[in-house]
Image 1 (cartoon, rainbow, N blue to C red):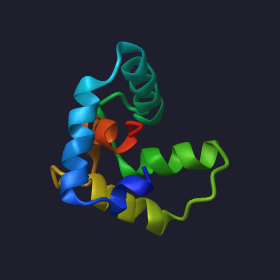
Image 2 (tube, helix red, strand yellow):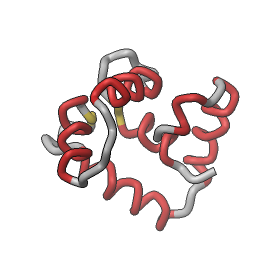
Image 3 (cartoon, rainbow, N blue to C red):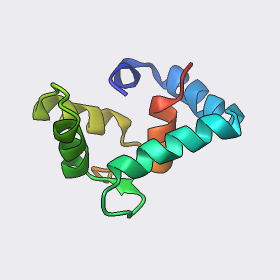
Image 4 (cartoon, rainbow, N blue to C red):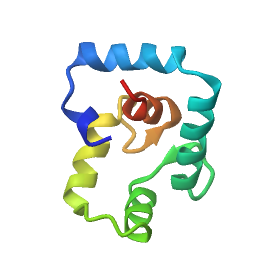
Length: 93
């Protein structure tokens, strides 16, 4: 997801298309990952959920970086990452 935030609008659009072309197995893995982060099961990943996931997996990512990442991925502008935004950011180009 880190590398996705610095991509252009064109690249983000292309990534959204790739999501639609992904295999069922790829989608199954990404869905499981999304659900692992979406702790409250709302279908939205809140900043505190990402931070908790990072902490529980001993990742070294600062809160400021997480906030910047969310800001970049959040097309809807609601301060959260929805499933489509997550998929577009995580699909393997």
